[in-house]
Amino acid sequence: MNPILLSTFFISFFCTFLSLPFWIRKAKQIGLVWEDMNKPKRAKNVAGSGGLMVLLGASIGILSYIAIQTFYFKTEIIPSEIFALLTTVLFAGFIGFVDDLLGWRHGGLSRRSRIILLLFAAIPLMVINAGDSTMMGIDFGIIYPLLIIPIGVAGATTTYNFLAGFNGLEAGQGIILLSAMAILTYITGHAWLSVAAICMICSLLAFYIFNYFPAKVFPGDVLTYCIGALIASIAILGHAEKIAVFFFIPYIIETILKIRGKLEKQSFGKPNQDGSLEQPYEKIYGLEHLAIKVLKKIKPSKKVYEKEVVFLIHAFQIIIIILGFLIFL
Image (cartoon, rainbow, N blue to C red):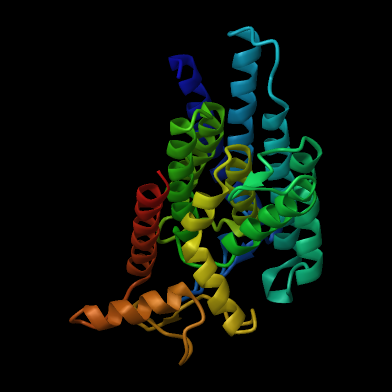
């Protein structure tokens, strides 16, 4: 890791950090604003789709990395994999932004349209025959690029979008998961994937400053889709599908709970006047609801707040990642 490559991380951070105030103002001007659902007095003018600036910052950082390799290190061959990864992430982010513009309250893209479009987002990885077709001792051959890759990309992107709706949750989860993927790919000799992951992490850190409680901007599907697609792409290109699936255990649980609610129950809590949260339903339809229930049982005051729900989910994710490293490495 040459010190000059660190500049790509600073570029990612500051591109996002400096562009977000502009985006927040413009989003409010054009009416791209949403309610902060977990607050007793809901702010109705919080800027939406801030993840677009995260995608911009990370993309510029990754392109800067390519430029440094080309003009400074005189690398004659830039792997086609890096362009496939970037194209997949940009395609997924574009789909998420369209979904945001159509409005989640109005259903956004239909479930069928969303899945079909996300399958198309995997095409860049498919056409270069990314990854290793041998898994668990079985060579899947042509089935791997034609079936497993698109299912992996669409699955990771869709499920990552389920665990959301609380200030700092999506960005914080992205920082945690991508940090784990960066460490993993660096250990296994795929340093360029680590660079791509860290570029996104730096953009997310800049976004987190504005998205932390109380949020000045929301991520939107544009953020969750591009993070999910990036994690899937790194797992495929870094031959780390098994451990990545293990890291996704919280999202698998979230998906099961969402299906229990027929994909119609929202993740938000029910806010009280003092800012504390209650379970919105009698049954649990998401890890967010489960976190509220657990915190109510262990806290003497029985008062649960939004930040605590987010931190508990982050803690659960970190435990899963540590277990993943212990089991698979």
